[in-house]
Image 1 (tube, rainbow, N blue to C red):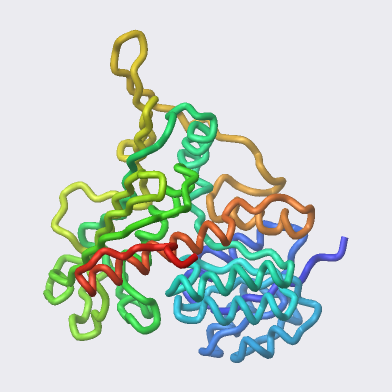
Image 2 (tube, rainbow, N blue to C red):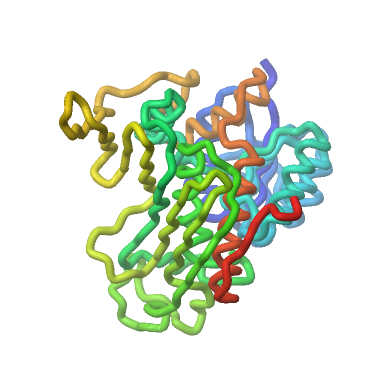
Amino acid sequence: MEKIKVGIIGCGGIANGKHMPSIKTVKEVEMVAFCDIIEERAVEAAKKFGTPDAKVYTDYKELLKDESIVAVHVCTPNRSHSFISIDALEAGKHVICEKPMAKTYAEAKAMYEASVRTGKILTIGYQSRWRGDSMYLKQCCANGELGEIYYARAVALRRRAVPTWGVFLNEYEQGGGPLIDIGTHSLDLTLWMMDNYKPKMVVGTKYKKLGQQKNAANAWGDWDPEKFTVEDSAFGFVVMENGATVSVESSWALNIADPHEAMTVVCGDKGGADMFDDLRLNYVKNGRQVIERPSFAAGGVAFYEGASDKPEVLECHCFYNAILHGGEIVTKPEQAMVVTQILEAIYKSAETGKPVYLNEED
């Protein structure tokens, strides 16, 4: 079978660490085009992951002119997610865009509308959904084992792990700090478990208390306070249309002794669950409080031929299974755009000191 041709737009850390190695595991796919504003990055990626005749670009619009390319991976800073993805969809390509979907809800909505208009697949890189504990908990929630989930926490708290490379500290390029970077994963997980994408009201706060400090014992070396233009922590309180409550907690640097990242806590009227000490489910049985801990040591279901159990590989295979075989996309753009909507509302509330009411005009 002739392999489908794929292009990579953005050849930095996330492309090299996640996307391109995952694509290499899909036997029906080959990478034929690489684009980066720093040409050397694209050249190096082409040598390492591309076909012998792979092309290199510094302008993504030139890459999109290649009609043989079926799909693209958008691995650029957050600022350019929307317009690159929309241009790719309009050019007839299927798109997997790295998280978050976009800097703003308006941009994310435009991406979704472009996918509907063009009939092309669009999905967002929330690979935490593909972890064993996430998939197990999702099944429990979908089965109704927890009942109606009315309270949840989206937790992404680091003690001292500020990413000091690339443009992570650049508000213009990224749109924010830990909230939009890692808080987005936890919020996506939480809304997915709840199957609730109708936020009503958001209150948020953000801080830059530790980002101004030096010699802060950071996991990736000291940051430059002058270049630290985003928050170091941010928090949100979300009320959904059905009355459910979601707490959002994110930090790159926070004086907390027990950090957790890409975690969720969900509480229903029949039971609850958290991911703090592996996955724990809690409920009442025979008049006693019970905690259940599923084991993931024995391995799981082989979802796709040739795929490992790495979340990013399963995510990639899901994308190409949808393209090649009509399979279902797990991370739907209409879900991801609500994550962006809530994140934007937290930032807006933090800046104005007022609650933000959503969907009143929609």
